[in-house]
Image (cartoon, rainbow over all chains, first blue to last red; front, side, top):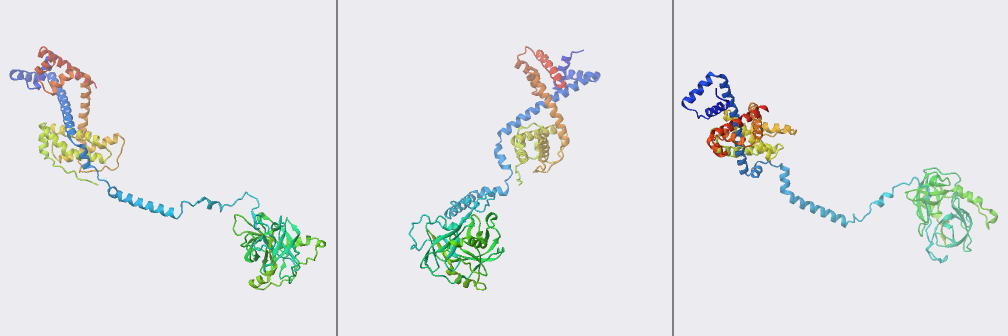
Length: 363
Length: 188
């Protein structure tokens, strides 16, 4: 019996085809007679074939790697690379044109905006205007008196200065205006629509109702014809058409509107809220209804809010007149009871009212 | 956007013959002809050129094993066979990387290659085992075994190369090495 080593070498020789002649015959004979030896041969052959498979695969891999190295992979890649979609191709083709077009558009828009001053405008100022200050209860009424403090005092001969409006209470020279118009005044003059100025003295003030009563003391003053209007005692209704005449400039200006609320600023029951165009200089002007009754006296308008003017109710004018001690007056103050304006057209009413409305000039 | 990969492919029968004869030239032509197709497939489906190289080389190994097993029947174009194998391999690899592609983009017709791949996997396993066994075997055994069984060198050459005094010593050494290799191979 041969050793395992010898047998293996024999099988190796057999598998390599190195056996010949009698040795080969002996080997074949042994395989036939000894099944265990035959199995050993088969087993060995399988293992060797396994081994040679391994070898050939290693060789194949190294061969392929060598081939792979020799290839220009990048070129192949470009050749087979998936084509970019149409949009991308178009973009690649036209991107310079697009960039130029975009630049031109940008420059054109910028230049236009720059030349029209768009960039210099501050937008933030527009925002505040519409904000309503709810918490603030400060009285934001603008007194409609014009500030003439910084003007030099020149006396009554100066034709161009005015401070507010006033209107006749009676035909004998009593005039009513707002307290704030004559407040702190050295001397006060009134000027009628003809341009004649008369010296007046302050005979009564009522700061609570913002009222002041003046009396023309000028010797040049002649008694007026009887007043065409009366003073309404009852409160006016919301929605009533009203008009006013005042001196926001050197000339009488008619303004038209309607009563928009029963009470004035922040629930002030002394005044109406009136929707009427008024400007500094209108203060002290009469507020009349269609029939020619004085229902109030313009005294202010709300800041930061459009179309809200205020007028002191006429009943408070009457109260003030009553409060004046009659003994202190040179002449009797009698309030007119007869209305001659009712039924007239607005222009006729205006003509009739003209002589009774004064510009109040304060120095 | 499909782009036809154009190449002058050699006739399939030539290639089969070349494979059987271990022709290097055949391998080279095969590689140059069909690699672009696989590269295109892999690039278009979430891979890069290294992935393409691995997949393609594996498919060539499958083809070689199939041809050399002797029972190769050319019932489809070689191109279709290689493409189908690569496609399956690549899908499998994507799956392992848990990158799923809902719609793989195809560039060629495909045939069923599951059987071939099963055989290939078996062979692949044995290859891996053999590889690790040989590495564990160490030198000089590894070289002796490789020289004798794979390079088919004679005992005499090996004897001279390793400086053994006579062929019998070399044979003993080779026997011992083989026994160890078998042990390593079968124990894993």
